[in-house]
Every structure is written in structure tokens, then in C-alpha cells.
Image (tube, rainbow over all chains, first blue to last red; front, top):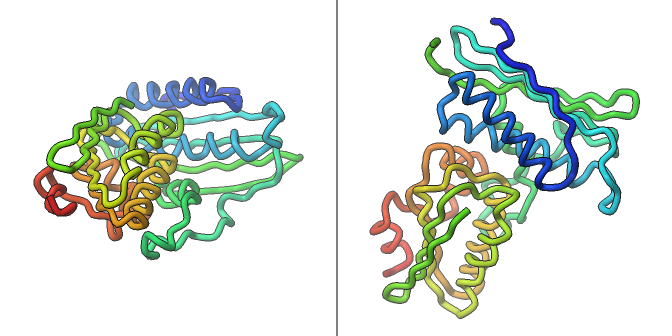
Length: 149
Length: 112
């Protein structure tokens, strides 16, 4: 399974920069032949990962430091696989160690927020967090079963 | 995100079109939550043309459900596309919210 496309983007904290990176990822998936409903599912994952860093990695009034989004898109017999990673030099944060929200709780007791990371963990095949040389690196593998084209 | 709002027979129906994501929820939040400004409001979201919902969108939906509960109102959604249904299922929303297949279903769910 060869790499069809590789994307490496510097990202910032504001909505325009985030939207531009997500747009690039979406275009690349479309080019790889991923159907629109599955692209939508991937975008949920990508948006959660990118906005989480943008919002929380650095103090609210500071600009982003190192913030990159990278994706390797492969297409093989089983479908399309994307290895998506975000890297930042903000405060240490391990998304894989977050408590799982109580998705069985009634509306009155449900907390507003906290679902983004849960969606990423549930919608991806594999997740890996590493803190190395003052940087967070959070990577996930996402798959989409489509017939080979 | 475009929102077309109709008020018919005491029910406020918001037809949403586009993405309910981090960059668009501001407008949606104001419009949808504003529907509960009077007690016992009945509010429906038409989700048929919503391409995707991220956690920012889920937050607005949950806040709407909480508002309805707190103000003796009713709140229902209908027409969730597969990608949206997946997100609702993972977050447990499918089990606690009133979700109809079609508009008639949703109207019954809000007691219209």
C-alpha cells in the first residue's frame, strides 16, 4: 500500500487557519476517492484534534508556538487509510489518558463539552500519544472501506 | 451553516443546512437556544441537510435539550444523515434525545 498523498501543514490558532488546514485534508481525501459521508466522519476527527490544540495548548492570549498537522493517505485493497498527526510545543496533554465521558447519563447530568476527544478515540482505529523534546505528538489511524478503484 | 426558521402551529422548526462545526455553531447556538426564550416552547431541528456535526455542534444540541427540560418545553430532531447519526450514537445522544425519522415523527415527539 503506497502513500498516495502526504500533507504537512503549519497551523495557527484562529478559525481561518484551522479551516484552511481542514479544507486541504478534505480535498486530499476526495482526491483519494473517499465518498462524502466518510469524508464527513474523517473531518469530525480532524477538527477535534486540530481545535483541541488550538484552544488548549498555549495560554489563551498567546500565539501558537510550534503547531503542525500532517497526514499520510494510502489507498489499498481494504480501502483508504489516513495516518493523521498533530504536533505542538504547548502544555503536556495526553488525549489518550482522558476520562471517558458517561455517555449513558440522562440529559440533566450530561456535561456540556468533553465529547471531542471521545469522538476521536471512538472513530479511529489506532491512537498514539508521545511527549518528546517538549512537544506533544498525537497520531491516529483512520480507515474507510471503499472498493479499490 | 444556513438556518431557515418557520413557526407553524406553535412549533418552531429550524431547517439546518451545512456543517454544525466549530466555526459555525455561534450563529446556530443563538438561533436555536433563542427558541426557548418563552416557557413550554416546542422546537424541532431538521437535520436532513446537515453534512456533519462535531463536538461543538453536539454541545449546542445538548444545551437545547437541557433548556427544553428546564423550561417545560419539548425538543426533537429528525432526518439525521449517516455521518451525523454515527456521532450521535458514539456520544450517547441517540438514547436520550427525541429523534424522529421524518418531520411528522418529530412533530409527534414534541406533542404537535
